[in-house]
Length: 248
Image (cartoon, rainbow, N blue to C red; front, side, top):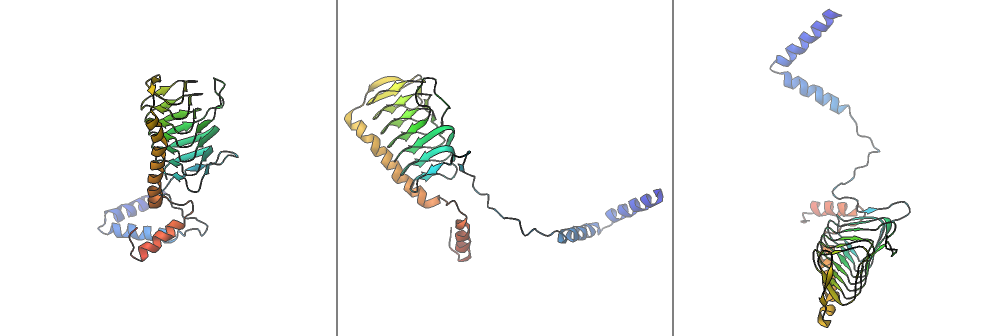
């Protein structure tokens, strides 16, 4: 047995030191690869995007047909996005504990995080409601708060549990609204914690829904350019365009 091991080791050493050893190795590799057959049951998927609609238990996020949700947005659980609303790139709407609603023609801009708690310590509703014609600036955090129609939330703001923004109000960028705080209608608030600054003029209140409509019009352009359907039909369309020499 020991003699056989020495002979095998000697043969292997001589093969590796020979000038044609790479030819032998390549032949062995090709022979091994030819014996591997691909299973007919294997499904070939396209992994260019991430899964943005995540059902949790019996709850499935609902998105209106004409709403715009960017491809890298995450919607989980009890989330409803109404008609003409838009949720922009990088945002996370996590409705695993309670309801999250984005109302008609409202917009949630880039990298926002919206969450809802089981219950609110203030006794107010724990669900997160963004009513119609509301603009939520980028990098904003909303948690179990209520934003009534026609409001503007500035960028990098935080609205904590039980906070309330009444209609026709504006929160300046970088503001923090503590739990249970109410921003009355027609007022401008700012700061950390947020405080009253001044009363809005009639012209300023009229511009709030116009901003929401303008962002809705902008979302139509994005929707027509790069929005991909839930199915994989678009892959066949891209293959057909490529075979016909049409630029994608």
